[in-house]
Length: 266
Image 1 (tube, rainbow, N blue to C red):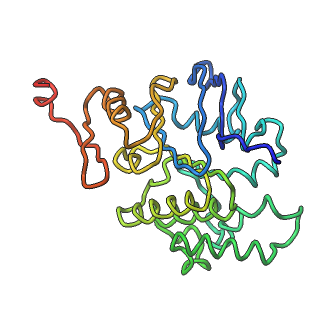
Image 2: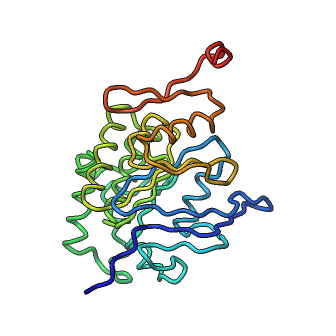
Image 3: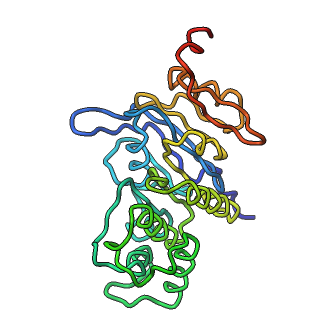
């Protein structure tokens, strides 16, 4: 009988990280469940992007991060890149690269040095471009695209990795509401396929669609729980100084700004 896999796709223990001389994360402990979408939210400067970069092994840190049960620091760069896909905030790529070539960058962890892409690579790229509705632009260069179109191509690059864990920092940047809805459907499909998605979002109402929410404030986790739980809603309202309130809208939750006079009255 095989040993059961650890519940956490990503776990962190005692994580501290600094930018320059300033410590941003102060002893973070967390477990992010497998086959689950976790949204990370918090005020500006809370450490959200720093935490996500630590989990992606993109920033120095002290403490231990494990990916699918293995210490992240012990994995080879190739294996780490196969198991974990990254979509950063405001990422760029060479303007003269075609959309196809940009998405194909997601397949580099599977290709030998200076080796040509395989049929499996081409299939993965086509699937990713179709999933983000970027297939029709595959021969266009990145410089010919709008900001929203570029974001969809960069998302396709991350999807082409076919990793078990996807980390996304502000993935909705430059996307209009219909394509934000498409992104939401795509994330839900990934979770149904057993993938783990972690996203930093400023769009609180969209973040409430996730399975779990992790709330950061001043480099520490103030709450982690199901997005549908009342305790999560109260913690979310509190971290934003009760300038927002969470309401039910059908079977979903939305965050709405609170008027000054309503906050005073309450």
